[in-house]
Image (spheres, rainbow, N blue to C red):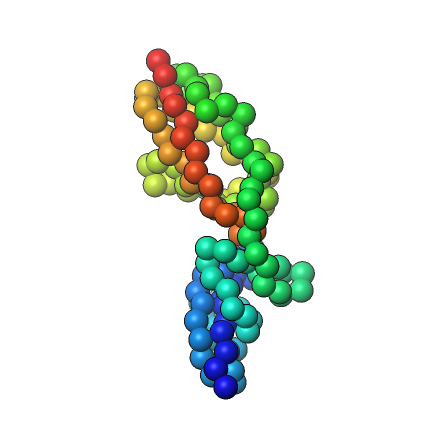
Length: 134
């Protein structure tokens, strides 16, 4: 019998891979520290609830920045708060930060538009654009 499976991180429930295989081989799909469950899910719409190892649907996030316009002085900050632990915030320069305290601050000393990606296991990915002005 063929079954669908997902491979997920035991740290945050983030689904890394998904596929189909013989039911008897689902647990054999585990790799690189990822765990498996028999479930039909994907990386965009689902995550694994760690308390009971069940597949869950992602929902819309309610977090947001306190401002989307800051001074390009390296001092004024835009703060994104209300983030779940293990949220990954990726900045325009490609650097990223894993949130461990529920918030992240952003400041810059050059004018421009800065795209920030937010990826939390239980929420759909979200993007914000911060405008830095002189």
